[in-house]
Length: 164
Image (cartoon, rainbow, N blue to C red; front, side):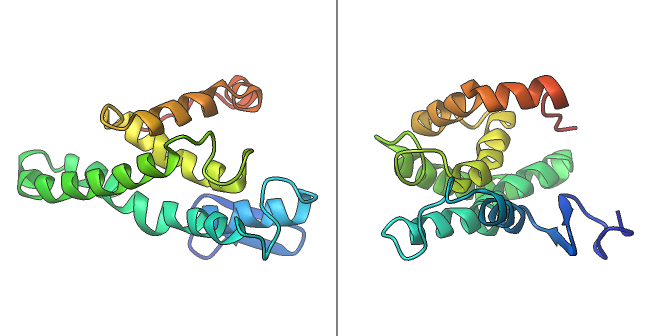
């Protein structure tokens, strides 16, 4: 991986002369370069700022307590004192996401956007940690994402998620 990007991390793409790491930047690049106006609101539109916020919120805020839960969970009993604070942050962020999805099919606008793609990993990790129960809007949104034909094709071709 270091041959592709100095951080030696994934995800990373190379598109022509550009090598891009960071999920949000990758999603944004692909949509702007190849989306032909689809999967994002028009820049300057009322929905664009919300779209941009969700694109960055997923990794900038929502993933932190999920990743802390993952790492601290591996500490077993040594991590026990940290769990109340992590659980509080998980509830805060997952509650925020759940509220944003109330009465909505997608995060922004009437159709799938890059914001949904970017937020999908938040939903996936919440599911892995069995945290979706109190968040019916998030759980229903994730189920809709899984039911999409493109998602089904990706799983058929690439295999299911593995969180080992």
